[in-house]
Image (cartoon, rainbow, N blue to C red; front, side, top):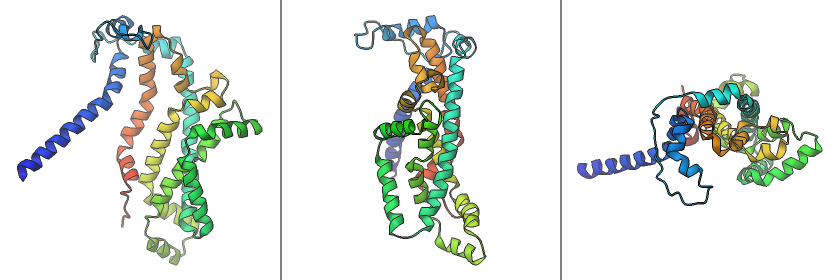
Length: 291
């Protein structure tokens, strides 16, 4: 039995290792190749980028992880010589950070209302929220465009921030998490004379800390990678985020594309690494009431 147990664990470990390498390989290649010179990149991958996207690659592609010589030319070109990339990066920050803060705040209040309010109307509204959550944003993009046009918000940041602030996914996730808080704990607080605001801020929010972290991470990653919304709602290219501007890098600037993609990935990677524990706990609904 022990041999079978060890064999099963070994197989699971090898499968996890293979999947981990497969998922991490594009990220590692992007980061390491961003420190290569343009000539070295063309020597290793020139056959791929010169194939036109649909032709047969006749030359051997050299997948390389360690550059022959570490250079920072691409980063200097992208951040110093061409400040457009840096401007687009801050456009992304100024769009995504308000969405994350507003969506977490709205979700916390709405989830508390759905948790404390009982009745058929609440059940209907929550079911309506679930239906909206199941709709992809491509379906609601045209209504958002029409409403933004009617409110004269087109080509402004509000056309993206306002729909993002009231997205239903966070409300659904946080409501399910808040309902796990023992009702006896809330009743004890009411007996002690706590108001609804005190129950919300001193009992519910601290117990939902992991869920709030996980929601913030998921929302940030989702909107950090958005492309369709700014393309449709922001006609002025100067206001568009870096996620849209990355596609403008042509084939003769592959090294620059690697460098800018690395910079673009850094906020998501750092946020994920910082809140990985909260993310797993929040999604798995493993939060517990602490005495």
